[in-house]
Length: 298
Image 1 (cartoon, helix red, strand yellow):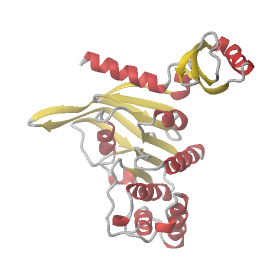
Image 2 (cartoon, rainbow, N blue to C red):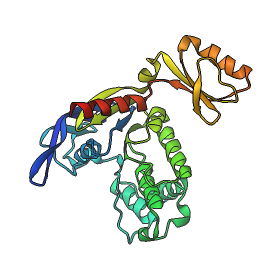
Image 3 (tube, helix red, strand yellow):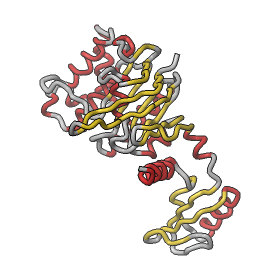
Image 4 (cartoon, rainbow, N blue to C red):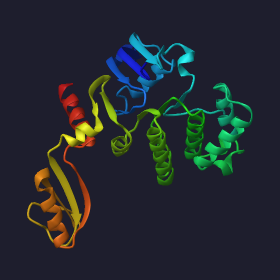
């Protein structure tokens, strides 16, 4: 059984009476225990795909399966945690009531319900607002509530659509750490993010979608390890051979992996401070190239 199976998904909407194709033959799979980043521009088809997976939309063609069951089957969502990009919560409820009711929907009641509710409200930093009405909370606090709701059920599969949306830097770090803990404990993670550095850190694989089509899918480590040229940036008063001025007192240069040690030693010899060492073609660079090629082909 796979956690997610998507095969040949097509979906069109009408815009001013004309059909606009949102998904065009989208296919991919997420294995149990895998962490997969689903990336693409706004309007690329990410949220449409997720809505089909959770039965909020029906595909025009193709098949979507969640935890081995057809996406239309409500039982496919049992034990699956989900946070949409723009969550809607009943404004008269409190974070405590939201999390507790979510646990009950997944068959968890009594003392265990109370324990998990308190635990996850505390982990997400909203225990102090546990009994305030949702309508009185900021967007960031509402986002923390929906995340607590998803994590509390101890999901077999966790699906997050832009989980960092509305969070301050501390909140983003907390959520990234929780995602990492969930992943390292063997959980299955499928998430959308515009922050490609987070995808590189938190995902084993990525699926890149653009204009409704899957343009690339690969292991993140495989992508980064396949690059022979490394980008090095350092802070210093002296520009070394092979480096060019970047900004202020920052210098950057491109080096084959075989010459990386020499470059780092040269920086150390002039008492420079290394700021960054990464493959030249990161996930961000691949993303940019795919989007540019798609625009040219349009």
